[in-house]
Length: 448
Ligand code: NDP
Image (spheres, protein in one colour):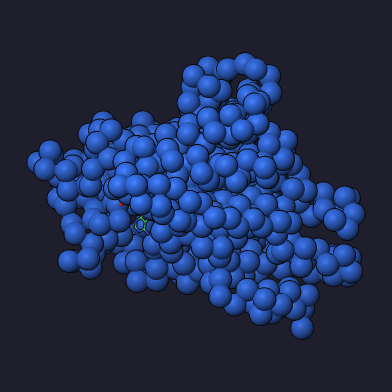
């Protein structure tokens, strides 16, 4: 049995009740086979893969808070500090009822390679809670965030672990968490990213993941002789990543015709009106049927009633930007039959392994999330730099750095894929390019 298979078997046995984590580990280790085989003896002796798959630390805690009726509610909080070989732990906080340790571990594991790919000094971590922000009042959100931070603060710090936003955690939640951290520590430091501009946030952080997705997608298309201008794009999601992906795609001359939320989706043949979408999602925090009600060119589809989704619409490029495993094998078959040429993941692991393989077998250019959505964390690291300098850079300066980082990520993963004989396989390229630096640092730092 090869070393990779040995470790995969151990990880499966040890984490049997965490399918998302197993899926992420399997995908990464499988694609690292060529590098591992080239160094098998040393890696095995050092138990490098076993250490890589075991979080350095995982914290689970009670989050009690009082709702508007005076009733005490209890949620579970998590922070997984997965790997600090190349820098302080860095990764978002997800607030969603589906959160459990397996989701946080999968996200933290992916984050190690993503952060390494950015070329910046940040390790991998992730956190969250099974708290559902939907339908909560502003005061309930604040009380939850304060309670969450009242435990988390002792485990994080500007040089230790720097959390950020993710599903359910936006600027408002980061503000409340930062305020509570500052109060508990009596220290104003860059401990969270995605902060408001008035207290250490970075310009362009809000736009960064969506914009970065398009910068990388554009570079991938250009490398393959394709012009993005004039192309039809299907986007899923209607949150932070989706909104700014749509905006940048339009700026690059493409036409985005779909978006979605957890209840339904929009097909707008005239192209999505970003200003209207922002008004509905960022200001009114409403459902997407409000978009169709305000725009005659748009159709609203109820996901459950119709059993349909955005991938049923014919497009050249698909950008899944909602959540994990939202694009399965049947969707992949429909997209390929409709002539899709490129898929780039804005969300984390939105495409199932089976669907990814189907795209690759059918010659579809496929950019994995750990590379394609790294713009958010890269800009978070730029926010950390600005906080350390006590300076703020202009929007243009941050945006230019972001674009350069995304172009470099693509070039590095393209080169890594070629070096190991997997030209055009950007999944393998991203995993190898991300892994090499982390492995080198782990070996140099000894058995820790
Ligand atoms: P948001 O919470 O802003 O938006 C998420 C969007 O996806 C919403 O439209 C939401 O709909 C929809 N969605 C969430 N869960 C589900 C579900 N189970 N089924 C169907 N739709 C769902 O999150 P972000 O845009 O920040 O994040 C989206 C993805 O991108 C996540 O995978 C995240 O980990 C990843 N990511 C985000 C980064 C960032 O900087 N924000 C950085 C890198 C990756 P509804 O409103 O109805 O819940």
